[in-house]
Length: 129
Image (cartoon, rainbow, N blue to C red; front, side, top):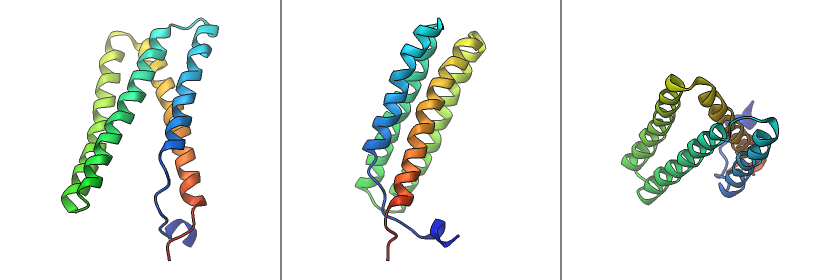
């Protein structure tokens, strides 16, 4: 249990970002081969890319000001990112549920790979002493 509670240095974000983007990109041929609408893939790709862009912006804002204020900006920005993502997905779901499900699946695949790789890299790092 102490292995999960021991702080570690923050891992590099590039590899998980590239892995998630690769999964999102590889979803397009799957959509085309399966005969699904490519608009669903495009929605998921735009949601994923927009979420990543907002995450980078909020992380940069917090890094420039390593204070309680900077941490608050990052925390509320990350919450706002999720809220905006869900608002867009819900707006699409109201008009075209099948398109929204396809977009959500693409986004979830990219996010899941990015999260899993980020966690693996974090716990593979040496604990701080």
